[in-house]
Image (tube, rainbow, N blue to C red; front, side, top):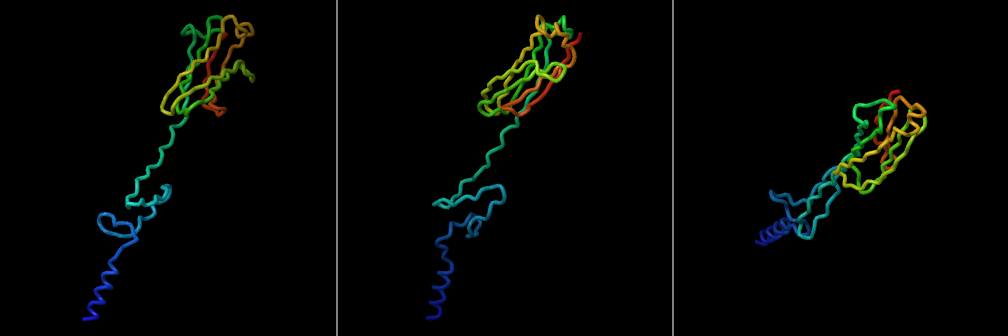
Length: 168
């Protein structure tokens, strides 16, 4: 009889799970397994329920698209073009950023530089218009015909480039 009482006490103690978190539905009784690489470990809260940790999604990439418009439309000649508008559409900016535009004449030197500050959230697209006056400037006087280039930078990092042509 005494052996039976001792066996039942040992069996009862062996079944005790005090100090371990509650078993998940379906049994178990072991602490949660390592979630794997890239997922930070989560401590079990006082009530045994661990909050689900969702990783922060990556920010959208910085994207820029530029297009060129001649004023008046359809003209390309130095004596016909009043101005050239370069429109930049940019998205992926987080907070505030400095957008630089370099307008390069045919040859190695920059003709004009412009800087604008843009404030946006990453999901917004912003449009910036940079105008290059042609009529009444040194462009037709010095015959700066050929392929021009507009280069764009966000906080000093290259974004995109577009070319346009002014004919003689």
